[in-house]
Length: 389
Ligand code: DNO
Image (cartoon, rainbow, N blue to C red; front, top):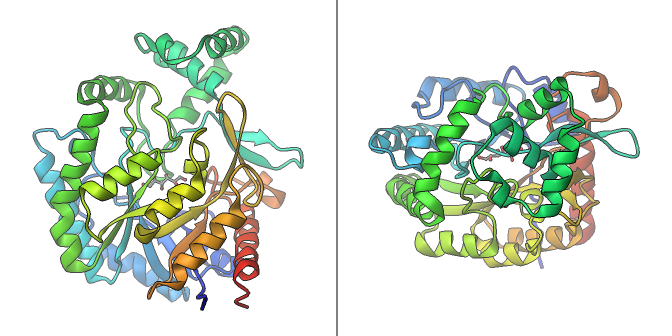
C-alpha cells in the first residue's frame, strides 16, 4: 500500500486562546481547526470576519483546514417556526466559508449542551489532570441541582444510592463547581443557564429520539444543495458522552445511528467527524467497527482515549492508553487515507493538563503540553504503522 501522511491539525480557539499559533507550530501541526466563536449561534458568519481569521492563521505559516464548529441553532434542532431563517443563515455562512476556500465543517446535533463532563481536574497517578464523566456526579446534578422531574427513573439503584450518599457530604462550593462543570460549554461562547436547560428538556421530550432524527435529516436536506455545489464536506461529531443524559435524546452515539444518518441522506457531503474518545465512551461501541462502517465518509478525525469503569463513568486517558486501541484505529485510518486525494485531517483531541500548564489558566482539555504529547505520540504511531518515514 502506498501511504500518504494524514494532515496534523490543532484546535485553536482564536486570538484569545492562551495557546498561540507559534506554540501550535512548535507542536508540529500544520492545519488549524477553529471557529468564529464571537459570532452568536445562528447568525451569519460575515465574509470579512472569515477572511480576517484566515489571514491571521496564514500569517503564522499555517492553514485553516477545518471549521469546528458552525453551530446548528436550537431552532433548527427543534424545528421551531423560525427554523427556516436559521437554515438560510447557515447556508450563507457555508457559502462564505467556501468562498474563502474552507470546505470541511464540523458540527454536532446534541440537544442544548455540547460535550458534558462532571469534573475537569481529575488527578492522574502522575500528577497530571484529566477530564472526567462520573454517572454519580451527573445524577447529583440531575436530582439535586437541576431537580428534573422523574430523574430517578433514569438511573439504576446503585447509582442512585451512591449519588444520594455523596450528595449528603457535598458543601455549597462543591455543588457550585459541579453545576459549572456540567453546564460548561465552548470557551468564548455563551454558557447555558439552568432555566434554559429545563425549558429545553421539556421541548426535546416532546420531540423524542425519532423526532430529533427527522430534524437532522431536515437540516441535512436543507443544506445539501449548497454543500454539493460548493464542495463542502459536513462532518457530524458524535454525542459526547454517547448516551442520553438529563432526559435529552441522543442520535449520534452508535453504529446504528451512523448507518442511519448516512443511509437516510446518502450524499457525499454528509460525512463524519470520527471521534474515538466520544465513541470509545460507549459501553457497547466497538470503535474500530464503527470506523469500518463509515470510513468512506470520514472527513475529519479526533483522536483521543478514554478509560471506563463498570458503571460507564470514564476519564480521558493518555492518547495511547485507555480502552480505544489506537494502534488498530491508526492502521485503519491510514489505510483509508491512502485512498484519498486530500489527506484526512486529524487532531490530538484534548490532553492532560501537565508540566508547566498545571500552573496556567487553560481551556479544559485544550492546554498545550498534553496535546503536544498526544500529537507527538500519534505522529509516531502513524509512522510506525505505515513505515512512511
Ligand atoms: C470537545 C469537542 C466538541 C466538538 C463539537 C463539534 O472537545 O470535541 O465540543 O467540537 O461537539 O460540534
